[in-house]
Image 1 (tube, rainbow, N blue to C red):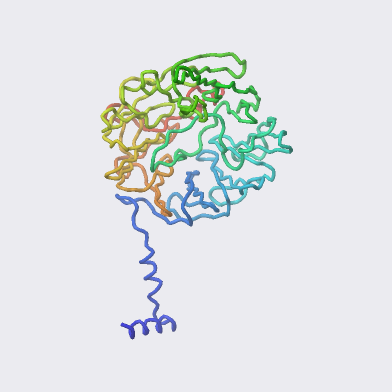
Image 2 (cartoon, rainbow, N blue to C red):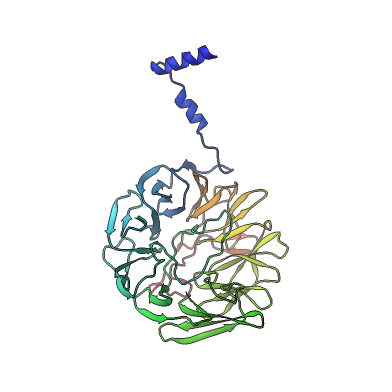
Length: 468
């Protein structure tokens, strides 16, 4: 064996025959991370922090760099050093925004080529949306300007003055006063990609909340919360959430205020939005919810979904039902028997579909699909949220990282893979705005997912006569 090894080394050194590259390729070969097989699987430079669809590319943010890969093949298109990265825009006008921590400025890159489209040297924070990019720059700690840009624009759409942006607002998408998303193991928090900008945003500055109209840049309110209040901006309203400690319990009340007039437009008492901890009812968290809806607990212990715009109860769960995912259209809840997940439209009482799932199954709703992650056995399932039709069913322990119009990215360690919808269970879903093709599934009939929600549930993002 020693003589044979010496002979192989001599042959490799003289260039006659070198088996070592092939052996290393065999040792380093990636095992499939899912069954059935995926469209492609690639190993990226580091463990992904975020993965986002950007048109026909997949943007992978890592700890110190960002890279883009072709959606069709997974091959790398470009790579850049960056401490943070985020995607703004939709399928046709997506851009990648990158920057360095503790360094002012950012760059806007083309997702296909990596070429810089626009550069800024002064901004301290950036917020990325499907239809808008916001940045904040400060000449003094109390003299800041908020600017709005079209994702591929070169001049601001509007600017607004803010008396500071707070010590915690820096880099990409720092937290504003809105809602907290429900989370679940193996389902990335940013799986849905950038959303449409809300009609109003709440910027926390020195203990106050500045409410900004994202259509015009007008600062509508500058409000300081009361001692027992927490302020949140949801669904076009400024919410005053009160948690009062009395008789050993917390008593909750919510008021919805029109920021343009300062008038209260709705009030509801007794709903616990889970903003307070047990220590004297101090509210340290934003309410849970998504876009224009809030999640709370009714006095009888049942979970409920409220409309932030008018305070209506959109959904109230049955006893022992547990909400696992919600958006402006649907609610997914774990049934009381802990053996299934039930989907309902927020405007209807009848269940749309029911799917068997373990007590530890998690779920998420995106514009294109509902994704369920289950254990023992490990599964990832993408479903039409209206009909329950399977779009993809995978035997895998990988995480679901991003969902797009026609498929999703899954990942495990440094391996990422693309799964196309319809490869397992039929034709791919329709894109937003195309209406889809009617389908029939267990518990309901309706179009394929992705109906046009770009105007928002209240049509607040589209001018009259130009909706959609």
